[in-house]
Image (tube, rainbow, N blue to C red; front, side):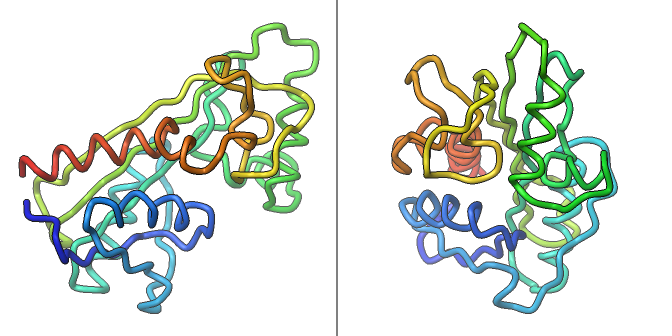
Length: 203
C-alpha cells in the first residue's frame, strides 16, 4: 500500500490516543482524521475481547465516513486479577462501583484491588484494526504488548490512563515518566502501530 497522502479516519475521540496516533501516523505519511471532526459518534463496544471491539469501531467509522478507518481497543491486563480490567480499563471504576469514569478513579480502584498482592505483573495490550471499507472481509489486525508492573504510588506527569502506576523495569520508570517520543517507540500502542504499518506496506 502506498501510504502517502492517505486519509484514514481514526475511530477514537480519546485525546491521549489522538496525540500518540498523530505522532506515529504522521511519520508514516498517513493523514489522520479524527472521527469527531466528521461528527461520527462513538461506536458501541459490547464485546469481551480487544479485537472484536476494535473491529466494531473501525467498521462503524468507515461506514459513516466512506473512508478507510483505523480503530484500536486497548487496556491494562493484570496477571493476578485474571486479566482485569482488560477491555473495561477505561470504565473500570464505573463498572465495579458505579462511580465516575475517570483515570483517577480507575487508578485508585486498581491500587485497592492489589493491596496485599506480591505479584504485580501486568501488561498493556493494544489491538489495532484497519479496514479499507466498512464491509472489508480481510481487515488488517495488529497487536502490541508492553510488559510491566503496577506500583502503588503514581509517578510522572506524562501519559494518561494507568501510566503513572505502570512501571517498566527496563527503564526503571513508569510510563508517565518516559518522554513521549520514548513511549511512542516502546509502548503497546507504538508496537501495534509499527506492526500494522509493516502489514499495510505488504497489503
